[in-house]
Image (cartoon, rainbow, N blue to C red):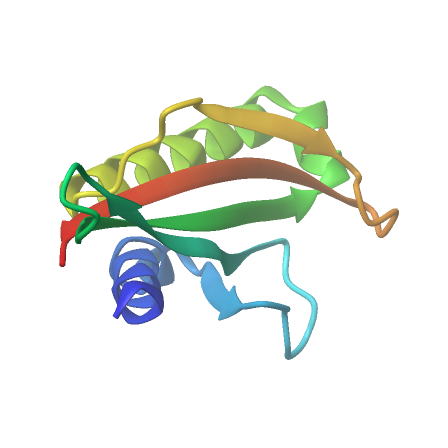
Length: 125
């Protein structure tokens, strides 16, 4: 459910802009920008009666973009635009981003920079 919601949300908001979303790892030809997401955890929260009332899914979304994009003001504006779209579309579907996003740099040493988002999705069991 959470993975499907994440995929649908990202596809709906980013696919029209030419950005594809992938679960776990990217496949296909190289592009200037792409998304990779993964489910980091889906834990239950117990309460006073020791019954699980809520579950909290943690989804990590990584926005990869070519490093040379930040060399121009138009490229930097595009990166900020996509970051804002990711946040707002996920918020609209009920995800929260308790610690904001952060720049991960060229974490894979592949010529792409990455912005990392650690979203949470709370739901009643």
